[in-house]
Length: 138
Image (tube, rainbow, N blue to C red; front, side, top):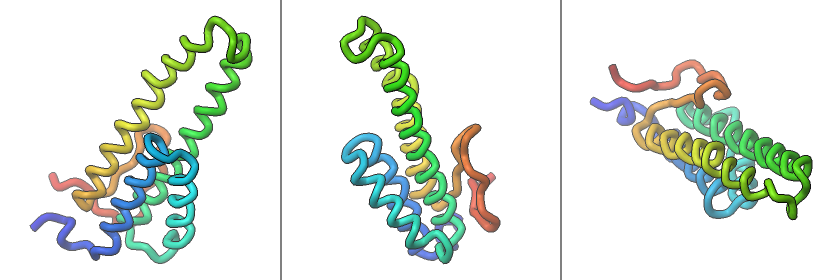
């Protein structure tokens, strides 16, 4: 019997929704999807099942890190001569090749874990998993 069958449907749905909003924030509707994710986290942060709490926390944390990386990107561009400077496209392409694509891959992996009813934590920067959070079967 897979672990996802042991979980309440609401926890699974919230986990999937959180990861989908995270990916939407990165790819489709930046800002708008982040606000929806924050609202979802605020509404369910205390009473959601462990699976949903874990994915909500990871998605919000990942979105905040993505925002910090964008601020750093803009600071680097300004320091290297502004948006008309010769290094602008080098910095932008490097950012999207390494940082943004890594965030998207982590989000897709998180979505797959949420759909499987398993908790997942971002490498290095991820928040600790709550107690009772189901993990991958051995």
